[in-house]
Length: 495
Image (cartoon, rainbow, N blue to C red; front, side):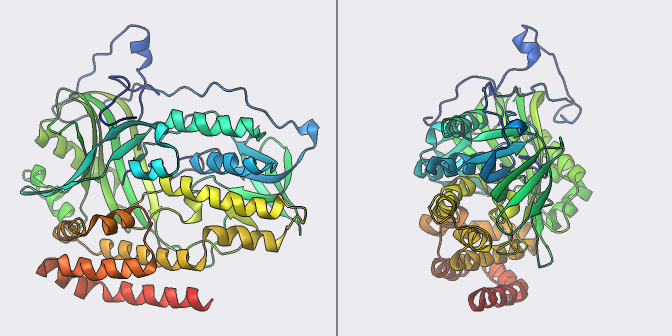
């Protein structure tokens, strides 16, 4: 929901109202297509509301940086080897290298622009000093609960400039002496105080700590529990349209309306059981990012089903897509157990469990946790004591997942399990009550900032705000997930 990573081994998600260009330049994508750059305009057309036959016109260009490469002849040994140059990997490399720690970042294409659309709450990036990496903001967001009820959220929302953010982080890495190696990490081997990363080009890199930031498809992180995740799936397009009905000063966080399925009985029945909503970022009267999203399902909802629902929705809204500038398929594993803590390989990003189990938000959380993990690494490897091996692994893992954070995550996972049991009407009632809460609580929940005690108060307040049918849903469908959550919290506390 806004912040997304695709399921892959590589990163797979201003001032208000300001859009830098009428078309994307550099969860969106802002650069004119090659044909436009050459002075030609592609006259793409589609059936009214059906855009699936249109091919995306824009291919992002790699960053123009002279990276300091790691040469095998150097026989260099590093303190930290980071696998993956996505947002998590580059952010951690930038942060940990500030302490003088020797870092090497391994990625098949370190200068590629991240493919995903990232949306964040503006105050999250402001607190991290990253607000200049937003290239479009909206002063408020809205939620269409149904055809007769709309919630207006007084919280600024922003779209992350992917190129801006990566350029800033890579600049920091270069300034701090981070080395890069262009290859795919193939295998990781461990000795007592040293690990070796074997790359697909035959190069071996040695270091005291290996950090896996390669995404959800990682093979290097181990689990000791069954991975019973839910899945968020979405189809999004950045499109030039003839017109759209949305206000330009509001981003659409959720549109749960289903009147577009009135003439689609089979889609309406399936949507009533496993609902999807529209997420929209309007940039101008004819440029908009649209994404049909299944918040969470298990098993995952069919991707074709998501696209069919989106076609029906846009047709009903009178949105005729003229050109697709970019598209994306988003598949996010949510919830499930944390990795085994500790273990020889540290994780950050998608494979570390930082994805919000109830919403899919991740990028702001990753930007925020990287400095914490970096400090823990520097305390061990930047000191004269050189704490390594099992003691190093334990300290670094616990910096990301102290006991309080683990218990809080169990609560967020309980929220996901609750959402899995709600149909369309149940989801509408839930979010109607949720956004009636005091802003401190709903904002804190979405930003993963509430303590366990505050989450308990949120639950009590949410039940009080809920309609009678919603209270019945909670009372009848939540006891099993609640018992599971309490059991897991008890185990974390005892452990």
